[in-house]
Image (cartoon, rainbow, N blue to C red; front, side, top):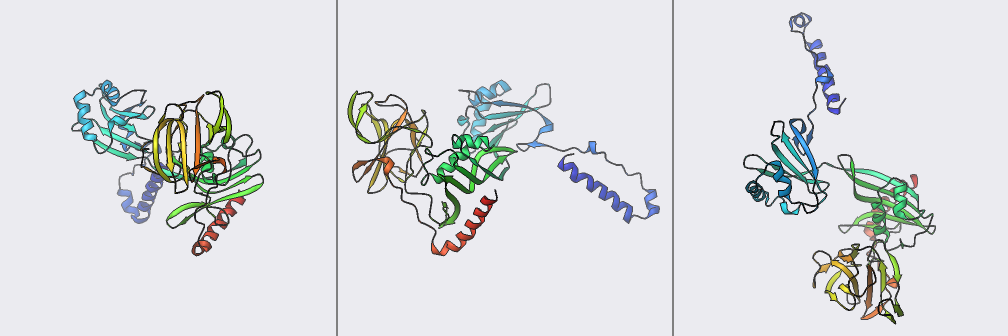
Length: 412
């Protein structure tokens, strides 16, 4: 029995009971026999994208490589002039040129011999879709799936990697990236040990019972080398940050690394044998090996002071000035991030580009460099400077939040 049927049946029975109570017996005998509605006759109208599904035959599909909207609509009977008119109608709602490979779509066709398509729906992303009414003067509207945030938790130990540990404990592995982002200023996640323990409270976004890789950590404890580290979310000065149990911000001025996952292949040195040039020379940076296309982040807020190409060296590179003291450089990029140009302000963990092998390089990697007051320094020895701790005025309120979260973590 559906939920809607569970609601309707008691209502019908209740109505019959009211008849029995309030209408005199004699008059009841004169009434026509009341028809009892069988459960099977109660019909539930099911909607998808706001359209009643029973009224249509539905054809589902997925956008293929290099496929345009015309390639999808023409085989379903729409002419090029009609598609142009639909495109004009769509302006200001959705750019029809921006359909992407792998995204789903659906045709709602009339139940006739021609199977005339009445609606076309394109899934923009996991929560948003656009509905095209294909008859008459056309119509276009955006829609949103109903989003639900579910409270979840996970606890376990690291055996090989945090990513694999999440999969072992039936949690979305993306949660490992979320933890790395929160604890990235205090824990070296590329040096975590077997038996390190994690305990996480979080909310996960769901659409139509499908879990999405969009999560909000509401409390966490990560035990590294037998030392527990806490992450307590708290709003102060209009900004929600994560703090440790003492009220110190976990977010430093700089990230520990400009990549989420990597392998260090070369460190800062004044004398390194260059594999391409076949000679010893200084290497004032750290090489992080990672797959082509891995996002490269700005380690802190700053301004792009250079974006260019070094044919005989760093290939595609970006240089960011963070303050009067520090400048960072990101080299051998395959391509640049969106909007990255000279003079542009960037935020911490904004994508500057993607790992590549441009310039003089033997394979895909990032050559990352840091200058302090104009002199090269070892990027691995840069100390991040934490943001403002919990103020005295907010400490009492923070203490209540902290104790509540730590209690919940311990109960897991």
